[in-house]
Length: 81
Image 1 (spheres, rainbow, N blue to C red):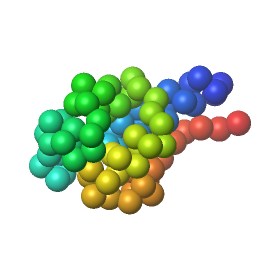
Image 2: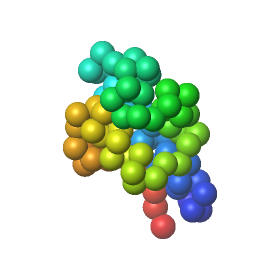
Image 3: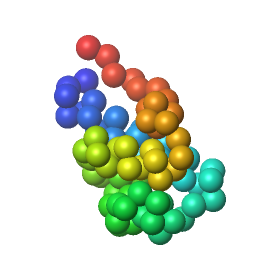
Image 4: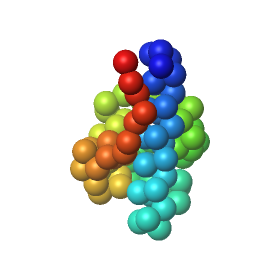
């Protein structure tokens, strides 16, 4: 797997995790926008794995979801060298 494929897999898995956490808390995209100060259209792109984010945005999402950053990274990757 090359770097581009690995990044794409990571972004998709991360986005799925964000969406799962958001939905498990009964939050809409607009709710998470309010709590994280990240535009709901950007959150949607993150959840779809279409947006690579900064650490600042990563922390805002974790805070908005009231989870630790580690919880958002708790997923399996199929990345091998």
